[in-house]
Image 1 (cartoon, one colour):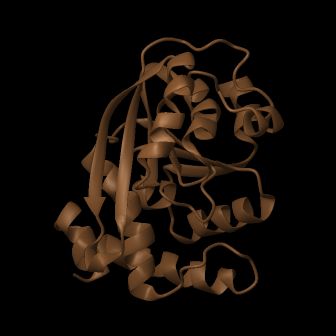
Image 2: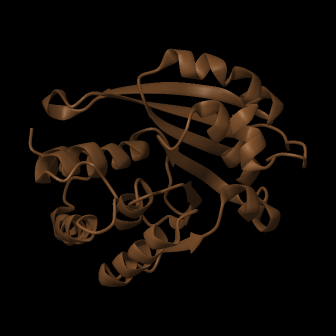
Image 3: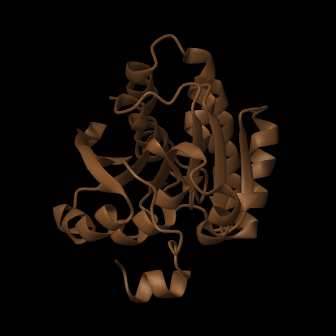
Length: 228
């Protein structure tokens, strides 16, 4: 299956939005020549491993009309594809200014009015946006027990932290304690096989059931060196 076919299997009738993805691809590859955004640059691989993979999130949760924060988005995954194909309001945060500059230029180029990119660390962003988002996403940024502490404090009670990962049951086990401490529970695990034998993706859906202690998140050094 071609990448565009795969995307249209999720969003039938959205052919015109594939033109937007083509522009995204062009900008990504051109910028990648002088800024390390992705190791994947082949057209079909980008469409399946980045674009389609990002949009799989819409198969596990309805994000329309929701406020969504994408933590550590890198080259814009999953935040930008989600903003292109849905009407959710997306805030992308990343700790590297060069990536944010690329993303804001991209957002302008694609004429997207439902997404913005901010240069800030997650643990600092919580100071102004604690419990503000319906959905917080992270895609293979770090191990799950680290991601949980960075992401769950941003989620409203009743909202969701959605982690897009490769297949790794051990990582989920390691995160069990962190998820409980941070006031969430695993709602469901979804497993997808990417087209063309491009690998297995798991999406973990965690529901925030109570507020977490305001001492979380700790500094990144503490989170990394001593995960919950």
